[in-house]
Image (cartoon, rainbow, N blue to C red; front, side, top):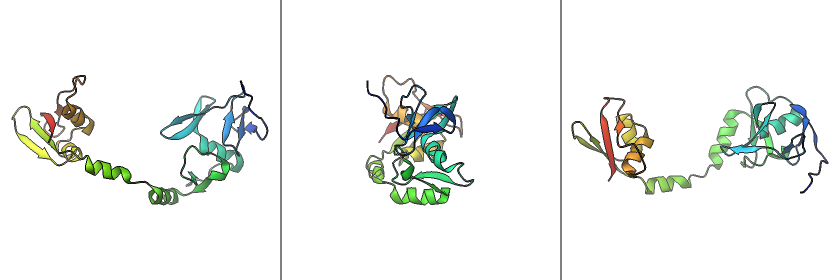
Length: 177
């Protein structure tokens, strides 16, 4: 078992039984084990039965409270790189502009390439309507797109066989065109 080098660790402002190294972007518990977990692409830590964003804890350890109206941004856009040198305080507007500028839109190519037309059949009236996409179907009939997909996929392990419209309370079945 390897030992953690405690050099450059200092007591954590939230609970001095924990230690933090802002240069490495790490936190250790009272047993000197690295802690933290990843959720939605960001690293979190639970201390005193409360959950905190890792990057906010690291930044606040050295800089104090985050100014009102500001957020903590990962300079390199890697939410798992929580070293102090990779964190900056910015306004939400600045953060959004940076995020949009650096966003990868390759997924849209696949969405457009894999866009499937949907045929909706009213189970009561047998009226058939075709839609250009799942989104269009969902919007027109006010049925969750996940329900539409499950019905259209028609997998035997799905118990969902139809969707119910919030507009007219009618049942619809779906197939891909």
